Image 1 (cartoon, chains in turn green, yellow):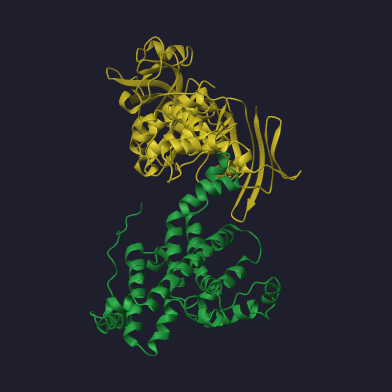
Image 2: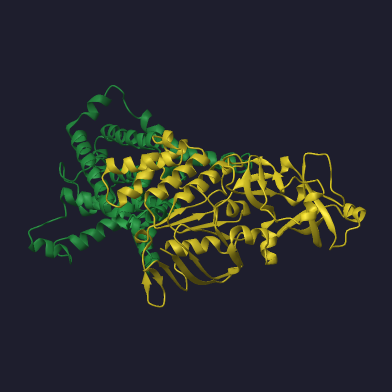
Length: 267
Length: 373
């Protein structure tokens, strides 16, 4: 164990403090403002409205499904990126991170042109009788596209810093690669797996741009909470704000209780 | 089963080129300064590192032959590794750490745990079975790691500075344990260390590595007590006199010291060196008296009437070492060293070649059991 406070924290130069304060307020004030806009008396009724509950249920189901898909496919991808020795891995890593920097709307368009009825893959699916765009499955796909990189990045970082020491020990004890992965690598990865999955879930829950482009905004099948908020805000601001509070609460739970290490920069 | 290896490996700042052979039941200590290539050699033996050229064979099985493109992966070699840090799997209890090897070889959980408990008892760690590694001290963790390596039923045992990370209180106990356990093991064992004491206590033979090459090899006590290579003498650094244990002393073999020296009264009928018993030794078992050159006082006449050990020795050389002078001497076939001040050298009028007495307090001498090899 290295002592965590071997040295006193370096003092913050005075000119930086007011600027940091501005940054903090920029993040916090709007959220506080959201709370002041709410009429506490109407809140229960707004939150339990049919529109809000449908959207919340759909959001939870799709975000969970997207997280599961990210784990199933993104987990192995993280292992390949961290442990693989093939050429071109850097390029693959860069491409995997693309959704992090790409505007989600663009991602949604890309999905639409790949998987839409006339797209190269979509037309094949169409012949097989499968239509993706504007379905709940499309919502899950859009969310996975946008959120999976969070899982891959988090896990890959943990795999790298975790080092291969334990896996080498397992090998000297006679464990093959698959056994070593199941009994050593994976269990040691659980904490970062948890925090990365929570982050992925949160990102999927808030997904808007890719969803509306690829899946549209059909009530009950593709209108998730963020879409419902946008839709409602056109004519009933109070209802939109109430639903927003739902998302804020979920976000706070994620940040305060689960504290994903990737968010806190200790990954 | 004999383990034999020839290894050649080049790195921009480092080259390793050495050969070794270890018989069944034999412990070979690979001695050398940091960066001599010791750990690299072990990594090649265990299969975690592939050399540029080399072959490693265990009995009739080839583990590595770069010319024939044979490379058996680590998990099929059954080379048990005990490293400087225990590297216990943090998510498993001590007993499950030890059971890992048996489990990997296909045993059922209950059976593997049974085997693991047996090995934990063998390393005096039975009571630690249920603990997670973060609740073990360094010495305890290293015990469990030793049990884990042995429980995997390795065909070769590789020890990489197993005591180097332990504090001074824990190291002697684990050294004694290793001594006991290694005597019962039948597989070839390679021990990498920079501590001469480890080699003295645990090894049958030593191989001295310097800058990637073998400078000296031979029976442990012979090489360390009478180093032929200057490099070995430098790293040896400690005085080492071997004989048989007798209570709190080491009795030198008859005839080890010249007749005349013994009749002068400073020593009893047979030369014996008294000291602190670090690890209990049965009388008559092989043992070594180990003391530092700085603990030696040098006299022209036999020092009398004190609880000191005195050995007659013939000076063979003087070399300046910082603010002391290292006197090299020979006593009954043992190369000894003493660090004295330049003033003392002048007072005694020493130039080399004369007969002197090396005196050392019993409290400065450590008596260790040594390998029978």
